[in-house]
Image (cartoon, rainbow, N blue to C red):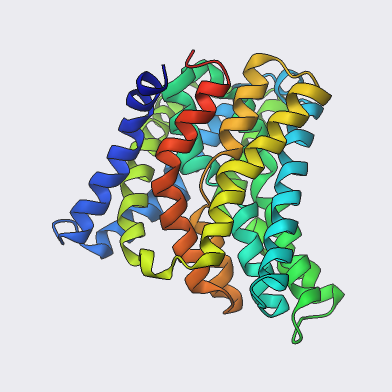
Length: 314
């Protein structure tokens, strides 16, 4: 069964690999990759999230056990990564936080959604959207707040709060989610023409994002993947989903669909935002870049293993 699962999820990684190969060989210019990624993250994926949140049953998918299982595990992974970088690798406090942030911020949208869709079908994505609804604000809140209090040149409380809210409200994914919530909660009926236009853009989101992700990864090298990156890879691909599984299955007794969504999303490699976070603070950039590339490559196998643990494909 594990081979069948691997074959099922492999197309997701092959699309990313195609983007990597095309960009690395300069068939697809890196400037075009930036444009495609901008389209995916600023328009297509926000439209996908808008459509999902606007049409989903919020009472059904916003499950307390689902969110606690995922985010408690994320905080533990972040803490372990930060403490590990500080104690075992003697990194400065700010560097340690940047490294730990890579273990906190899973690639829940660009990798998590297409893998869930391939494994369990489009109808299984609703719990993923609940996780995504607070993913960026939660991670930025934890990461920025910890960084500001950890680094020697950190800002005060008020500038820190402003930085947190600024990071959240500049995020196009958050805007798409917010508009989706507004439509859902208000009961506004949008004309079919609008939904058709949204569908056209949203349906391009996942393949465009995956291809662009592969192109972006050409900027990073495995030479950057030192021991800190290996630690982050283990935390992201094994520890985070393992704790999520334990909480979701044994503590909250989640349904099969919720448990699958939580664990598969937790099993994703670090997102590109973890590198952006490191660049923003000029701390831990090589380790963040190395962790993204290493964990994304290894996740082909580990994600397949987690889907096997969860009972195979739907």
